[in-house]
Image (tube, each protein chain N blue to C red):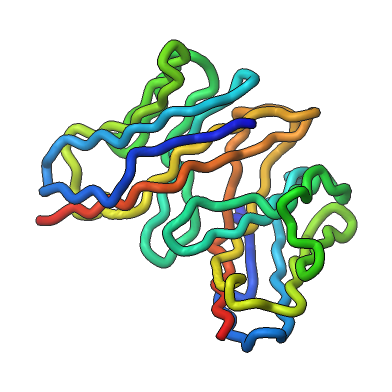
Length: 114
Length: 115
């Protein structure tokens, strides 16, 4: 079945550091790929997505490129801020018998220190 | 546009008691999901509805969990009797149908503690 593997956390960085969170996937079809973010005490929010190979999703300075050849969707940001501290989830979505299925990775907790 | 609404936000119950969570999806969204998120883990799908029909309930512990979606709009998830391991956040989500790239929108979650 479909699955997502994320970089183990927690990740701790200093403000203005470069961020990479690795994500790889296994899928039988042609999935769309997502990054969701969960701030403390809040629900999941879509951060960015890509729906086909070589697409780049971007939002709030974060970006990720759908790499079919390496089955990856790594999240990057050039200069992180304290406000980026959250849990980040990589997810894939596929159509199974016409129904959209969303499968999550285990999440990576990010802490940014001033 | 109104988001996915869930209630209650927080609930503390004793083991063997029952609890119910309610969800109202975004207007017009045919697909509704209930996920369980245990602390430190990624969300796990419990049940998925397409309109008022069940598409996938393979990971729903049917001896204690039940869910319904009345008239293809709002939905209720019930747990009876609750166990300690049911302590988690229950997330409701919704999306339009038919495309894997549709954004799936989540509510703020219902936080359950079983003591």
